[in-house]
Image (cartoon, rainbow, N blue to C red):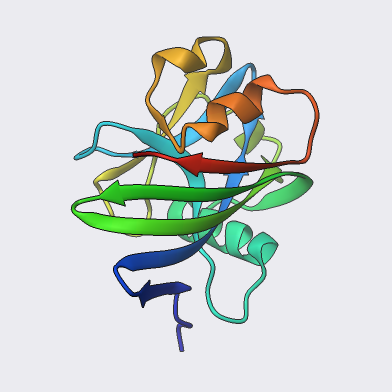
Length: 159
């Protein structure tokens, strides 16, 4: 039985608990984009009840891309406040450094397709040196990628 995502309606907010990964190969970071939206986000997904953020990230990458990963470090906690499609969100996001386990997967530089049938989701590699040219949410991700002192705690308010 599938567990419930940690997304709750609280007053006029949606509370999300999310786990995301930063996978970097050859100066490029793996992100995902919904082809119907104008922004990129880190790969990952919502934590399920009773699940820790590391297990979440491993599960989401396996479900969405069919790839196994290892967690190689902890990067950040981001308290993220934003609006999307008329709804207010309060999101707590755990960001881990990760890498593919399979040596062949570490060579991938092409766009990866979603294997769950979500054809609107694409996994793309963006050049870290040109990160400011891309719309990545939350915006705090760009600051984290440029800083050298980790882990960090960020509060991101998009208003």
